[in-house]
Image (cartoon, rainbow, N blue to C red):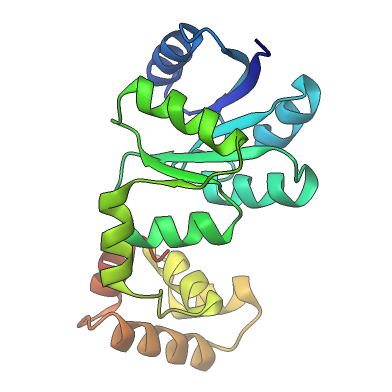
Length: 203
């Protein structure tokens, strides 16, 4: 039996160690690398010649979706399983667009995660069925890349002038992006737009 070499990326050490221990009990899976930050994933995958990367979405340095895109670009043969605590339809769509082969919620049984690891190596795509249905019902993310960037900056409390300076835009352009984002999220103000977009996984 050939062993599947797995990279596990998760910023919470207790969760990461528990997952590593559970997946390590599988007869054909070996956790050969672990990462606590998204920006450590590519180097760890290269160093340990992994077959599958299991990535959490919420990580410092770089989120799991960004890390998945970097892996897909630099090491296209690696299979990518994205897991998340937050079953947000927008996350699923973005994870698939970034090149993920599987998308599961983190509280899935370890046997289900192990099965997903095996199935993606066999060329399958594995998606949590409830999330898939929710994503179809939700439709596509209506926000453009720029609108997402401006909303993310607004979420940190930056003013229009500060956002404009950071993004090399005029304050009027920033105001227009925010206004459009507020309309698209059916929100009353920027704070509510950030909340709605975050809840749907659009940011």
